[in-house]
Image (tube, rainbow, N blue to C red; front, side, top):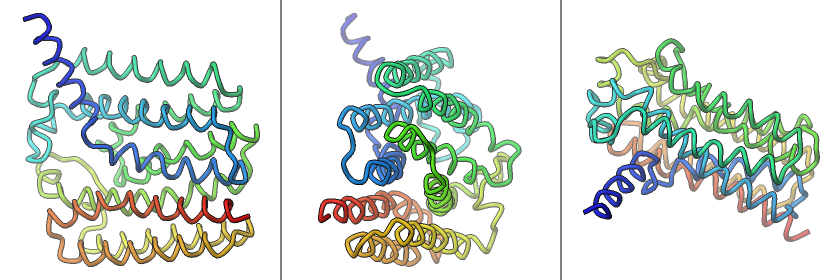
Length: 291
């Protein structure tokens, strides 16, 4: 009976951190890998790479627990989220906070043991952004922009870990990621817009209103333009440009999905964004490998 209870709690904790839904981890990981590959000229240190991959999973998981704690009173009123363990009162708020703290401490320990002081300093900023993001939905008209910073802060950390510096290209890459994040998280917010309006949560989908689709496509365009500028400044070759062309094609596919604002298709577009990040990384990695 004790074993069964533990298995039941573990199952709930895995649901809390979205273990069965890796899309959030991937959306965090791809831009981090962009930064690490550029910073290391395509030859990353394997220890640094491992720390960032594991750390990305840990921090995304901790972020899910914090997000559900912050939104526990809202989620039960939203059709898509009312079954989450905390919203359904299957676990306590204390349990969620303890899980978030444990995961964040393990991630911090990895940075302390394996990475340099500058990366550690930036990790404190990254943790603060991740922990505070869920609460911005209450007062910030476009929390997706804040999320873009939180989800992209692995980029300057990657440069810091690889080069012990954060050059301007890292901040431009962070800006590209911020626009991409606004694009895909607006698609996500379009799914819950009706529920969010009822409960008073602020999102970019509500802020943009009937211009939501145009805003999403503009953000994709700005992200691609910045990535193109980075490619030019960094003298990247045809493989990188092929990856950007594929990403542009994916963004056009997303327009086909979201232009009628159907909930299921908007959610499909959001989930499909992992391919956007993947093809940019594939082009980047291939270009360095060819060299």
